[in-house]
Image (cartoon, rainbow, N blue to C red):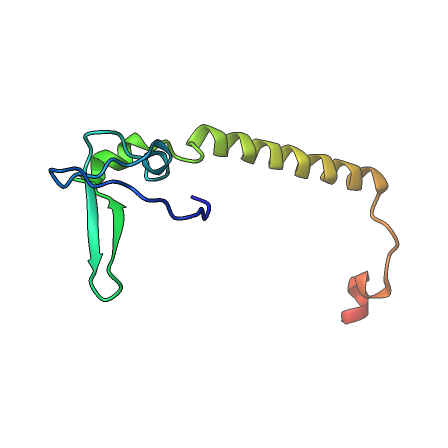
Length: 107
């Protein structure tokens, strides 16, 4: 979440605080979920963190950045590009022969 000006929230008579929608979105929360509160008495501040009951279930909800199929597609593209470069160099021929390329030179 980008730095924004601090805002003032009202504390209800029952001690509850209603979090604005942008704060809920930034923490990836929905109404009814839990948050963990860390209290810093030295600075008289609190820190809200998303609370996860079951990290394994939470990990299953998240979509991986790249799946196996995506990685295989990228690999095929890289292989095709490498083959194209190899075929171009093959058409050019062996190039200029250097003296050290002669096997009899080293005997």
